[in-house]
Amino acid sequence: AEAAKTVIAVERLTRRFGDFTAVDAVSFEVRRGEIFGLLGANGAGKSTTFRMLCGLLPPSEGRLDVAGYDLRRAAAAARGRIGYMAQKFSLYGDLTVAQNLTFFASAYGLRGGQRAARIGWALAEFGLEAMRGAAARDLPLGYKQRLALAASLMHEPDILFLDEPTSGVDPLARRDFWRRISALAEAGVTVLVTTHFMEEAEYCDRLVIMAQGRILAEGTPASIRAAAADAARPDPTMEDAFIAVIGAAEGKAA
Image 1 (cartoon, helix red, strand yellow):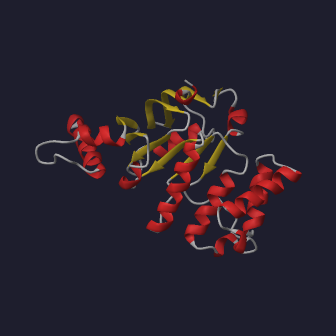
Image 2 (cartoon, one colour):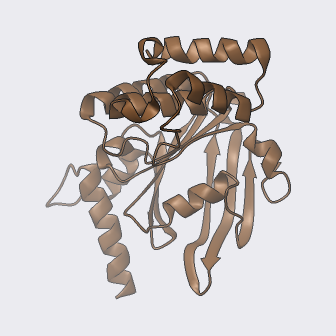
Image 3 (cartoon, helix red, strand yellow):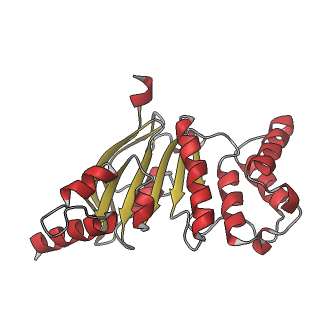
């Protein structure tokens, strides 16, 4: 029963900016140790949904429980259980690798021996020891990504939010990144990821496809692909499925 515990519950989550509805009554649940994907084109509402889940943006309406906390009332407490890796790596370019890790560890409330231990862990675990004195801005992109992930894990969060985490990263670095994410999920960390890379959707246990602020499809990658199968495409790729789902929604709207 513990493994199936709901860690994130979203009910009719809505966000308006003036007259524009960016997220329109979205509902889903994520269980402990699950890799859950928000898949959509740019402007689909996934980053806005994400920022609400992280406590970075208040919802206009709807219910939002993360790590057992109602985000409307206890955002700070929930944030202590969350690691967040932003789309454009939120590293400080002028600071060295070691200084970035120290900064993020301190920001998450780590002190003294505990902080030193986690910095040592990050340098070893992510192969950053040789670059500890290098400025973050001078790192190759794959290493920037490793450092950003390490920074988001300094306080051993229960939930990891990854916003377009592999944008611009080469395929080998991307595969290495996903191997790390899968290992974290195996260890019980819940991972929520936004992506527009169709092949990355395959790493998710379950995902939703969003367009225009709404959820159009939800399920495992296999079930979403299967639902898009027809005589012309008996074995559709995730990209085929995505296009079919978006196309069907536009057809209904037309």
